[in-house]
Image (tube, rainbow, N blue to C red; front, side):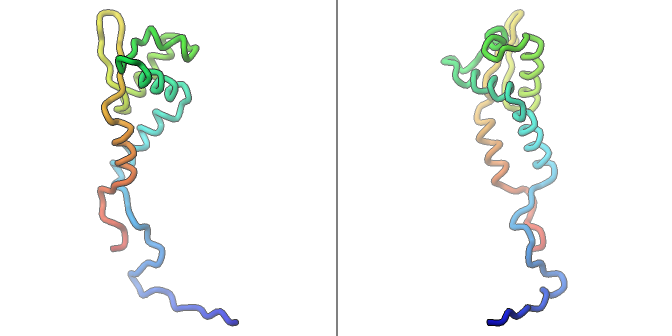
Length: 121
């Protein structure tokens, strides 16, 4: 049995072009969200908030479960808010956090969709 080589594709054609290309700005936004979720304490905080019967949690109730100080928990929560994953509501002295409606679903949808036409076509 012999193996025959085929000629390279004609100029301008690509044999290995990616099927889709993600708009650079969309990629930056997605990366920002994933970066916010890259810390285990932040993932824990998201899970704790999601598990609350009211769908929200006071920062004062989040320090114990993650065994971190209140300033550290507040810092992690700010990162999650800035990434668009949590909503924050100030009530007097305390801040209450809730999952942003469908934020994680939107993150998954953004990964699956594209904003730019496929490369090489």
